[in-house]
Amino acid sequence: MSDAKTATRESLSIAAVVAPIIVVACYWPALPARVPSHFNAQGQPDDWAAKITIVAVPILSVVLWIALRTVREFPGLFNYPVKITDENRARQEFLAIRLIDWLGFEVSLVFAYLTIQQVRVSLGHASGLGASFLWIALLAVFGTIGLYLRAAIQARVANHA
Image: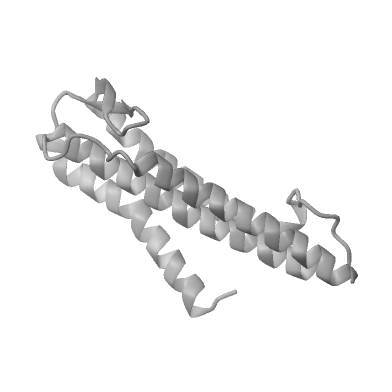
């Protein structure tokens, strides 16, 4: 699974985890005492909190990235949507690891965008996340899960035909 696409996605995931940390660190002195801490479904800030709260999402992103990197090393412990047999184990594990890689990539991008927009809104350079942010994020994550489920079920059927 160390093909060029996987390596590129992994590199972009790492960049998406690190970039918001750098952005927050660079703009920290300029940030106001209160920053947006929550956005509504239209992407507009609807709650504000102390400046320190802006580090929560980047920290969560790092923790989640480490957790996903760890979990992917133990595919035998996953909860699969199909019965695992000797015949389909390798394919099912491949699909599950790929799901974790893609979800990690997508969540890293979502968290990076969220943090950078928090900084931009705090500094008056943006008014929110954008009306389509929530729907794009949900479509990406749930679309990926849906594609995985379809592939996992097809792999089960293909191996039992």
